[in-house]
Structures are given as structure tokens and as C-alpha cells.
Amino acid sequence: MNLTLTNVSGRAISASVVLVTFRTPKGSQVQAVDLEDSSLLPQATPLAPGAQTTGAVSIPTQLGAELVIDQTQVDYVLFTDGSSWGPDTAHVSLQIKGMRAGWARAYSHLNATLKRQGKDAVTEEIQSYVASKRTLAKATP
Image 1 (cartoon, rainbow, N blue to C red):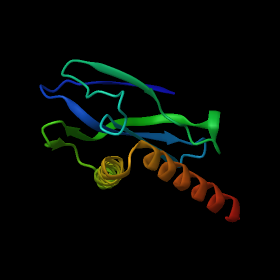
Image 2 (image 1 turned 135 degrees about the horizontal axis):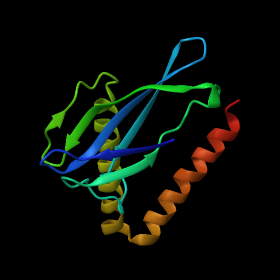
Image 3 (image 1 turned 60 degrees about the vertical axis):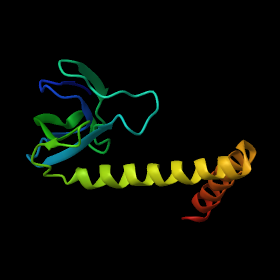
Image 4 (image 1 turned 180 degrees about the vertical axis):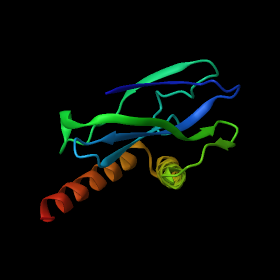
């Protein structure tokens, strides 16, 4: 399912959270959370005032085509000036802060390694980290 978000504010948006509530044939509800954060990808840019972005929202696969959209709402918006808007009922603002802190720490560490030891040391460190995650994934039942 595609979802289009239009920035109707006068400020650029760096992150947004949209909640999509689905209804099952039996009347129960399932919620999907769509998080977009332009600070995490180098090619991404903040959503300028008046601009639109369209992205795919994952439908919970266990129910698939049986789901009907019941409600769509913007739950949280983080602007590039650091201010925010929305009820944040899903508390995804905490996830955004955590992801950004993690990226900042990783960048700082890798930048320091680059300055001290050069690009080969950075490449080796990243490859070692990826290999350790693959080993862990294979060992986890």
C-alpha cells in the first residue's frame, strides 16, 4: 500500500511517523507504523514545506488481503529545527532518538578510525562487524 504525505507546515520535516490502522473481517484492529527519517540515509533530504513524498506501508502479511484500512493518521513529526508536532501515541520519537544517537556514535567512531588508521582500517572494521552479525544470525535458532 502506498501512502502520500504532504508537508502543510511552514517548516522542513526531517522525520515523520504515520499510523495505519487496519480492520480484520472479525472486527479486530491491526496497526502498522511507517517511520521516515531523512537523517539516516545520505541520499535522503528533509521534506520541504509544500512538498510530498510517497512510500510503501507494509501490510501485516499474516492477514494480507483480508485487511481493510480503518484509519490513517500522522502520529509524530520532527522538524529540522528540532521542534516536533503530534501526539506520538506510538512513542516512536524514542526510536528516532535512539537510531540517530546510534548513527552519530558509529559515524564518530569510524571517522576517528579513518583519521588515525586510514580507510583500510575502516573497511576492515565494517567487514568484521558484518561477519560477526552473520555468525550470530546462523547460531540463533
